[in-house]
Image 1 (tube, rainbow, N blue to C red):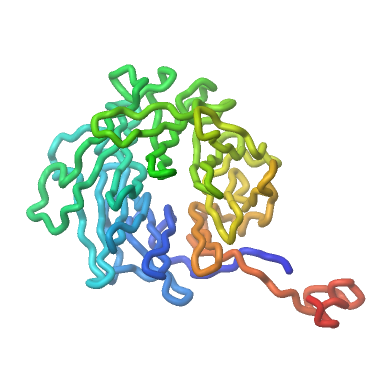
Image 2 (spheres, rainbow, N blue to C red; image 1 turned 90 degrees about the horizontal axis):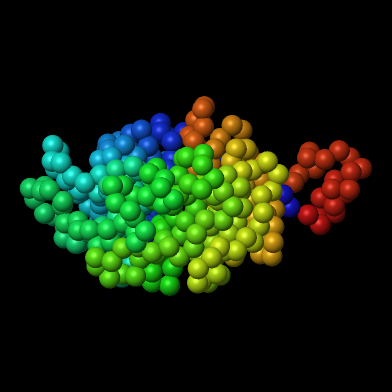
Length: 360
């Protein structure tokens, strides 16, 4: 039986989606423009907390910690936002008070992870100041809001940083967009918009967990990779790449190994997710849905839905959902099994005969 994208929820009016997350058995979506949190109720995305609440610029990441849901608003100014599932209310923890001069690295964070029930935010200030890892002390309800609201730098950049900016291969446009915890270690993927094939994108960095220690390179770039997306699957760490559209597997020591080359015209793999035991990825520029064959190749499972770009994927309640960013509307889609009907095929067609016989 065929699968296809179906609309799980129409346009919410909150702007383009950036992330999806399951929390307490509910599906949440972090959006841009209004920078707020949406919750799926039936077939509608509703504003969590009773209306659009602007945090900043974008909701870049969502994560659960100690019974609360946290959102990262950024990239500038960075804020940590807490959702109380009992009180159905928000608490905003600015990294710094307005008007206070702060290091660019803590001012521009693009991702966060949870390790040992603590939240770490990954700074990514391209071209100015070292990109670092910051730890939140977890103290809630602290008023009035004060500078560096409970955040401390635990890893100041990476060991090859030459100073005067976060540099890899003398590329001062390096960002730390992707981060993940694997085997109790924080790993970070680097990205760069520069066209130089020797740019600083495509590196895998790791932090040893010791405060004050810089990150080290766990795997250098492969080919001319400029960006990575990260996921853990079947006990291994994988990365989707741009502009090659490849799937890489980390060898666990010091190198990437290509396990799927580019398929067709797709030059980017932007989002990776594990669903029902399979690894899926979204692509660019044609916004397809791929699945890895677990051996050596991508397999296309769905075409683009209308003109929509899939910005986030999540496995929720046994279904795969995709949040979109499109010119007409921003939708929540579901990867659905569609049962064919007699009207789907002309009389005499083999599928028509099988449906009539009740075989499909």
